[in-house]
Image (tube, rainbow, N blue to C red; front, side):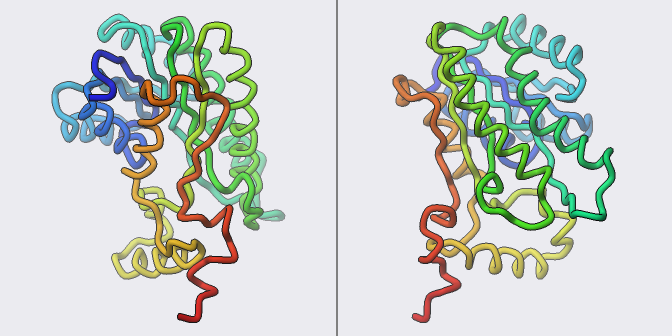
Length: 258
Protein backbone atom coordinates (compact mmCIF):
# COMPACT_ATOMS: atom_id res chain seq x y z
CA UNK A 1 0.00 0.00 0.00
CA UNK A 2 1.49 3.29 -1.17
CA UNK A 3 0.04 5.51 1.58
CA UNK A 4 0.28 3.21 4.60
CA UNK A 5 0.47 5.17 7.88
CA UNK A 6 -0.03 8.50 6.10
CA UNK A 7 -2.71 11.05 6.99
CA UNK A 8 -4.51 12.86 4.18
CA UNK A 9 -6.85 15.85 4.18
CA UNK A 10 -9.05 16.45 1.13
CA UNK A 11 -11.28 19.50 0.71
CA UNK A 12 -14.41 18.97 -1.34
CA UNK A 13 -14.16 15.26 -0.64
CA UNK A 14 -17.91 14.79 -0.70
CA UNK A 15 -18.23 14.60 -4.49
CA UNK A 16 -16.52 14.10 -7.83
CA UNK A 17 -12.73 14.11 -7.95
CA UNK A 18 -12.38 14.69 -4.20
CA UNK A 19 -14.57 11.70 -3.40
CA UNK A 20 -12.75 9.46 -5.88
CA UNK A 21 -9.42 10.53 -4.39
CA UNK A 22 -10.58 9.87 -0.83
CA UNK A 23 -11.70 6.37 -1.85
CA UNK A 24 -8.36 5.64 -3.52
CA UNK A 25 -6.29 7.03 -0.66
CA UNK A 26 -8.22 4.88 1.82
CA UNK A 27 -7.61 1.82 -0.34
CA UNK A 28 -3.91 2.66 -0.36
CA UNK A 29 -3.75 2.66 3.45
CA UNK A 30 -4.12 6.33 4.38
CA UNK A 31 -6.16 7.80 7.19
CA UNK A 32 -8.39 10.33 5.45
CA UNK A 33 -10.32 13.43 6.48
CA UNK A 34 -12.69 15.08 4.01
CA UNK A 35 -14.42 18.44 4.15
CA UNK A 36 -17.47 19.75 2.33
CA UNK A 37 -19.96 22.61 2.51
CA UNK A 38 -23.13 20.53 2.16
CA UNK A 39 -23.96 18.48 5.25
CA UNK A 40 -26.22 16.08 3.35
CA UNK A 41 -23.76 15.18 0.60
CA UNK A 42 -20.93 15.06 3.14
CA UNK A 43 -22.81 12.51 5.24
CA UNK A 44 -23.64 10.46 2.15
CA UNK A 45 -20.00 10.48 1.08
CA UNK A 46 -18.83 9.42 4.53
CA UNK A 47 -21.29 6.53 4.52
CA UNK A 48 -20.20 5.44 1.05
CA UNK A 49 -16.52 5.61 2.03
CA UNK A 50 -17.05 3.58 5.17
CA UNK A 51 -16.23 4.09 8.82
CA UNK A 52 -12.56 4.91 8.29
CA UNK A 53 -13.06 8.44 6.98
CA UNK A 54 -13.42 11.59 9.10
CA UNK A 55 -15.98 13.96 7.58
CA UNK A 56 -16.00 17.61 8.67
CA UNK A 57 -18.41 20.26 7.44
CA UNK A 58 -16.52 23.41 6.49
CA UNK A 59 -16.63 26.01 3.74
CA UNK A 60 -13.28 26.99 2.23
CA UNK A 61 -14.40 30.64 2.22
CA UNK A 62 -14.93 30.52 6.00
CA UNK A 63 -11.33 30.66 7.15
CA UNK A 64 -11.95 30.25 10.91
CA UNK A 65 -14.17 27.23 10.20
CA UNK A 66 -11.45 25.67 8.05
CA UNK A 67 -8.82 26.31 10.72
CA UNK A 68 -11.04 24.65 13.33
CA UNK A 69 -11.81 21.70 11.05
CA UNK A 70 -8.14 21.13 10.27
CA UNK A 71 -7.19 21.33 13.94
CA UNK A 72 -9.87 18.76 14.75
CA UNK A 73 -8.70 16.47 11.95
CA UNK A 74 -5.09 16.67 13.14
CA UNK A 75 -6.13 15.98 16.73
CA UNK A 76 -8.12 12.89 15.73
CA UNK A 77 -5.94 11.45 12.96
CA UNK A 78 -2.50 12.93 13.55
CA UNK A 79 -0.53 15.57 11.63
CA UNK A 80 -1.06 15.59 7.89
CA UNK A 81 1.26 14.08 5.34
CA UNK A 82 -0.96 15.00 2.40
CA UNK A 83 -3.22 17.97 1.72
CA UNK A 84 -5.34 17.98 -1.44
CA UNK A 85 -6.86 21.44 -1.96
CA UNK A 86 -9.55 20.15 -4.29
CA UNK A 87 -12.70 22.15 -3.48
CA UNK A 88 -13.91 24.47 -6.20
CA UNK A 89 -16.87 25.51 -8.32
CA UNK A 90 -17.55 26.07 -11.99
CA UNK A 91 -19.51 28.97 -13.41
CA UNK A 92 -19.92 31.09 -16.51
CA UNK A 93 -19.04 34.79 -16.41
CA UNK A 94 -19.84 36.05 -19.90
CA UNK A 95 -19.11 39.68 -20.68
CA UNK A 96 -22.19 41.82 -20.30
CA UNK A 97 -24.06 39.17 -18.30
CA UNK A 98 -22.03 38.88 -15.11
CA UNK A 99 -22.48 40.56 -11.75
CA UNK A 100 -19.63 41.47 -9.44
CA UNK A 101 -21.00 39.01 -6.90
CA UNK A 102 -20.92 36.12 -9.39
CA UNK A 103 -17.36 36.91 -10.42
CA UNK A 104 -16.03 37.38 -6.91
CA UNK A 105 -17.70 34.20 -5.63
CA UNK A 106 -15.74 32.12 -8.13
CA UNK A 107 -12.51 33.92 -7.29
CA UNK A 108 -13.07 33.56 -3.54
CA UNK A 109 -13.74 29.82 -3.69
CA UNK A 110 -11.34 28.73 -6.44
CA UNK A 111 -8.35 30.93 -5.71
CA UNK A 112 -8.53 32.65 -2.34
CA UNK A 113 -9.98 29.51 -0.77
CA UNK A 114 -7.13 27.37 -2.08
CA UNK A 115 -4.48 29.66 -0.63
CA UNK A 116 -6.14 29.77 2.77
CA UNK A 117 -6.69 26.00 2.71
CA UNK A 118 -2.93 25.53 2.52
CA UNK A 119 -2.34 28.22 5.13
CA UNK A 120 -4.84 26.65 7.54
CA UNK A 121 -3.30 23.21 7.05
CA UNK A 122 0.30 24.36 7.40
CA UNK A 123 0.58 24.23 11.23
CA UNK A 124 -0.60 20.60 11.08
CA UNK A 125 1.48 19.51 8.07
CA UNK A 126 4.51 17.31 8.55
CA UNK A 127 7.85 18.30 7.08
CA UNK A 128 8.40 16.29 3.93
CA UNK A 129 4.68 16.26 3.21
CA UNK A 130 2.82 16.71 -0.05
CA UNK A 131 0.43 19.50 -1.04
CA UNK A 132 -1.67 18.93 -4.14
CA UNK A 133 -3.71 21.65 -5.83
CA UNK A 134 -6.53 21.03 -8.30
CA UNK A 135 -6.20 23.03 -11.50
CA UNK A 136 -7.94 22.88 -14.87
CA UNK A 137 -7.16 22.94 -18.57
CA UNK A 138 -9.32 26.09 -18.62
CA UNK A 139 -6.16 27.92 -17.54
CA UNK A 140 -4.78 27.65 -21.08
CA UNK A 141 -7.68 26.89 -23.44
CA UNK A 142 -9.25 30.33 -23.79
CA UNK A 143 -12.85 29.14 -23.62
CA UNK A 144 -15.29 32.04 -24.12
CA UNK A 145 -17.55 32.96 -21.23
CA UNK A 146 -15.36 31.55 -18.46
CA UNK A 147 -12.97 34.38 -17.62
CA UNK A 148 -13.36 34.12 -13.84
CA UNK A 149 -13.06 30.34 -13.73
CA UNK A 150 -10.11 30.25 -16.13
CA UNK A 151 -8.48 33.13 -14.31
CA UNK A 152 -8.68 31.33 -10.97
CA UNK A 153 -7.21 28.18 -12.45
CA UNK A 154 -4.38 30.18 -14.02
CA UNK A 155 -3.78 31.71 -10.60
CA UNK A 156 -3.68 28.28 -8.99
CA UNK A 157 -1.19 27.19 -11.64
CA UNK A 158 1.11 30.08 -10.67
CA UNK A 159 0.53 29.46 -6.97
CA UNK A 160 1.66 25.85 -7.35
CA UNK A 161 5.10 27.10 -8.37
CA UNK A 162 5.23 29.85 -5.75
CA UNK A 163 4.23 27.60 -2.86
CA UNK A 164 6.66 24.91 -4.03
CA UNK A 165 9.47 27.43 -3.60
CA UNK A 166 8.12 28.76 -0.32
CA UNK A 167 7.68 25.35 1.32
CA UNK A 168 10.83 23.72 -0.06
CA UNK A 169 12.90 24.52 3.07
CA UNK A 170 10.60 22.14 4.96
CA UNK A 171 10.85 19.49 2.28
CA UNK A 172 7.15 19.94 1.44
CA UNK A 173 6.35 19.28 -2.21
CA UNK A 174 3.63 21.24 -4.00
CA UNK A 175 2.20 19.92 -7.25
CA UNK A 176 -0.97 20.18 -9.31
CA UNK A 177 -3.37 17.81 -10.99
CA UNK A 178 -4.93 19.38 -14.06
CA UNK A 179 -8.14 17.72 -15.23
CA UNK A 180 -9.68 18.14 -18.62
CA UNK A 181 -13.37 17.41 -19.07
CA UNK A 182 -14.12 14.83 -16.39
CA UNK A 183 -17.29 12.88 -15.65
CA UNK A 184 -18.44 14.25 -12.28
CA UNK A 185 -21.69 15.70 -10.87
CA UNK A 186 -20.46 19.19 -11.82
CA UNK A 187 -22.08 18.66 -15.23
CA UNK A 188 -25.56 18.22 -13.74
CA UNK A 189 -26.86 21.68 -14.71
CA UNK A 190 -25.83 21.14 -18.33
CA UNK A 191 -26.81 17.48 -18.67
CA UNK A 192 -29.96 16.75 -16.69
CA UNK A 193 -30.82 13.51 -18.54
CA UNK A 194 -28.78 10.44 -19.53
CA UNK A 195 -29.24 11.41 -23.18
CA UNK A 196 -27.93 14.91 -22.56
CA UNK A 197 -24.93 13.48 -20.72
CA UNK A 198 -24.21 11.09 -23.59
CA UNK A 199 -24.25 14.02 -26.01
CA UNK A 200 -21.98 16.05 -23.74
CA UNK A 201 -19.53 13.16 -23.41
CA UNK A 202 -19.44 12.72 -27.18
CA UNK A 203 -18.83 16.42 -27.71
CA UNK A 204 -16.05 16.86 -25.17
CA UNK A 205 -14.54 13.48 -25.94
CA UNK A 206 -14.17 14.45 -29.59
CA UNK A 207 -11.87 17.33 -28.59
CA UNK A 208 -9.07 15.01 -27.41
CA UNK A 209 -6.88 12.53 -29.30
CA UNK A 210 -7.94 9.68 -26.99
CA UNK A 211 -11.54 10.53 -27.77
CA UNK A 212 -13.27 10.49 -24.40
CA UNK A 213 -13.80 12.40 -21.17
CA UNK A 214 -11.73 11.49 -18.13
CA UNK A 215 -13.06 9.47 -15.21
CA UNK A 216 -12.73 10.95 -11.71
CA UNK A 217 -10.69 7.88 -10.72
CA UNK A 218 -8.09 8.80 -13.34
CA UNK A 219 -7.55 12.21 -11.75
CA UNK A 220 -7.34 10.50 -8.36
CA UNK A 221 -4.53 8.29 -9.64
CA UNK A 222 -2.53 11.36 -10.64
CA UNK A 223 -3.09 12.75 -7.14
CA UNK A 224 -1.93 9.42 -5.69
CA UNK A 225 1.40 9.76 -7.49
CA UNK A 226 1.95 13.17 -5.92
CA UNK A 227 0.78 11.94 -2.51
CA UNK A 228 3.05 8.91 -2.46
CA UNK A 229 6.79 8.55 -2.01
CA UNK A 230 6.99 7.74 -5.75
CA UNK A 231 7.22 11.52 -6.28
CA UNK A 232 9.68 12.17 -3.44
CA UNK A 233 11.87 14.44 -5.61
CA UNK A 234 9.07 16.00 -7.67
CA UNK A 235 7.72 19.47 -6.97
CA UNK A 236 6.27 22.48 -8.84
CA UNK A 237 4.83 20.46 -11.73
CA UNK A 238 1.38 19.57 -13.01
CA UNK A 239 0.01 16.36 -14.46
CA UNK A 240 -2.60 17.04 -17.12
CA UNK A 241 -5.24 14.32 -17.45
CA UNK A 242 -7.22 15.27 -20.55
CA UNK A 243 -6.61 12.64 -23.22
CA UNK A 244 -4.12 14.95 -24.95
CA UNK A 245 -6.55 17.81 -25.63
CA UNK A 246 -4.16 20.55 -24.51
CA UNK A 247 -0.84 19.26 -25.80
CA UNK A 248 -1.92 17.51 -29.00
CA UNK A 249 -5.06 19.32 -30.15
CA UNK A 250 -4.50 18.59 -33.83
CA UNK A 251 -4.86 14.89 -33.09
CA UNK A 252 -8.35 15.30 -31.65
CA UNK A 253 -10.88 12.68 -32.61
CA UNK A 254 -12.97 15.49 -34.13
CA UNK A 255 -10.43 15.91 -36.94
CA UNK A 256 -9.98 12.25 -37.82
CA UNK A 257 -11.50 10.92 -41.01
CA UNK A 258 -10.93 7.26 -40.19
